[in-house]
Image (cartoon, rainbow, N blue to C red; front, top):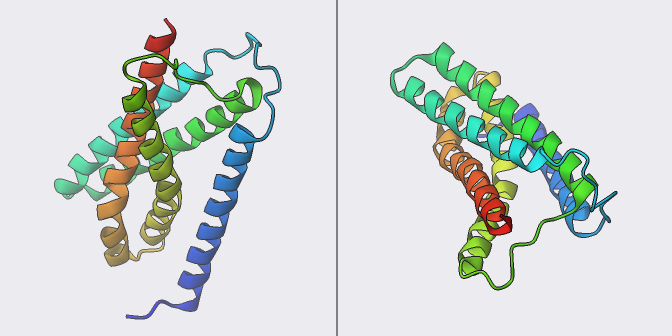
Length: 178
C-alpha cells in the first residue's frame, strides 16, 4: 500500500524536526559553553531527569500491559503519560546542560568502560527513538492503527531501553561521584 501525500509530508516533517532537535542537543552538549558550570543553581535537575525517565519507563510498561489486555483507552492514556514524562525530561535535560554542561565519569573507575558503552547505546538509541516515537504517535492519533502497530513493535523496546538506561546512567554517575 502506498502512503498518501499528507502521510509522507507529516513523516518528512517529523524527521526534519527530529534532526533539528538532535543537532541542537549535540550543539548544546558538545559545543556551547555551559552558562555557569560551577553554579549550585538547579542542581536537582539530573535527579529530576532520572525520575522522569523512570516514570516514563513505568508508564510504558503499564501501557504495554493495557494493550495486551485490549484496554485501548487505558493504553492510550498510559502512552500519553509516558510521552509527557519524556517531554518534561527533555526540557529539564536542556536546562541542565545549558546551565551545567556535560558530566564526566571518573577516568580510573573500573566501571568506566561499561558506563561508556551503556552511555553510547543510550545516546544512539535516543536519537533513533525520537522520530520513531513521534511517528508512532502520528499513526495512532490519525487512526492509522495498522501502521501504528507495525512501528510500535520497534518503538516500544527502544523507548523503554532509553528510559531505563537513562536512570542507570544517572545512578552510575551519581555513585561514582559520591
